Image (cartoon, rainbow, N blue to C red; front, side, top):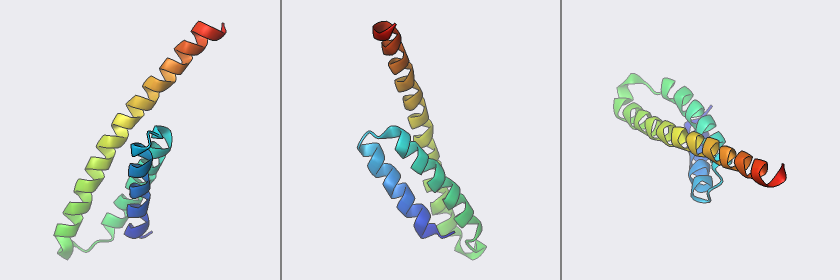
Length: 88
């Protein structure tokens, strides 16, 4: 799996995030991070600078994905509450 595909998927995650399509963004972040972790393993140790840059990006994406996960859970809770208030 190429790092190019992972980067494109993470770009898509950022786009979806900015459009407030959080569940879809979370999916793209998760898959993109998984792909980038695989790509990092293939980077030769002689390219330590590149490996470190990828690791930093992975950390940033994981942090954002964790925040989105919390946000999505909060939104689900709000929807459930509204449903109970107005539909029961």
